[in-house]
Image (cartoon, rainbow, N blue to C red):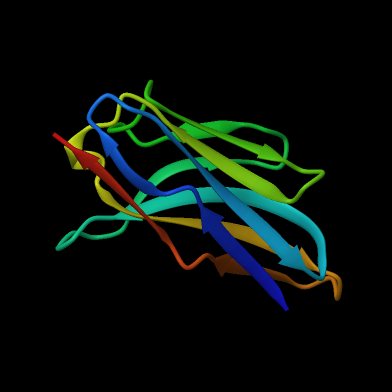
Length: 120
């Protein structure tokens, strides 16, 4: 059983910062790509940022220059640093990862989500 658990969400004033964490646990052989998505009320889920096992990153246009994705492979943990937050960044943030289990099979897993609210 593999689980992803996000933490670090909260309420922050516009212009503020937060760091989200995504800790993977269970029978993990390796983690390939790790991604962060978000979903605001009434909107579709949006890809925010991705990072490969080698550290290559990509960002959605709406967060480029403000958010930073990173990972610690020794701890099976991913991070999303949110800076210069705007009210429109308000959403539930989800992490997702492609995990190779101890069995050798690869599955995509999702966390339960963490709420980020940017106040004006």
